[in-house]
View (cartoon, helix red, strand yellow):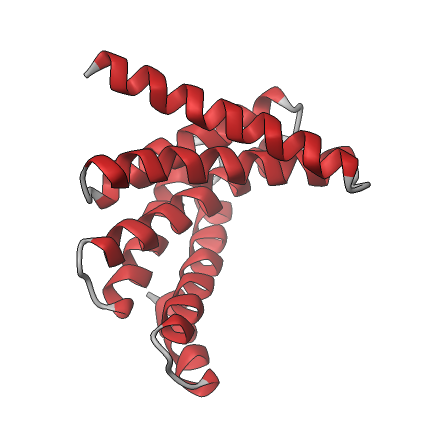
Length: 165
């Protein structure tokens, strides 16, 4: 199990560095590049977990940990670190939830929960975490609803419901 954990971290770090380089090359500001790198790290970590087993919480935790580590290493502000962690957790939770066969609604709820947890763990205040979580849930709901081929109206409604939860 240790070996798997190490390769997961390595994959996350490699993805983060690659995204950082690409971002800089594309002329992003250092902060934007760092945020992109943090999300790429989170994605890679989540993919590793999901490939092994569809565990929503674990995917979200690993993703947020990788994103926070990457964001901190890039010198982003604590708020930005928390945001990156929350967004990574949200994306990972949605992916894992859908992979596990959950409904889009359930996936969006999982995303909201995961992002609040991630934001708090990354040092955000409860208040900030709640805002970040609602935004993440809303985004996730809109994405999964759209991916499921539903109308923009349905996506907006789902986003509103998820953010309110």
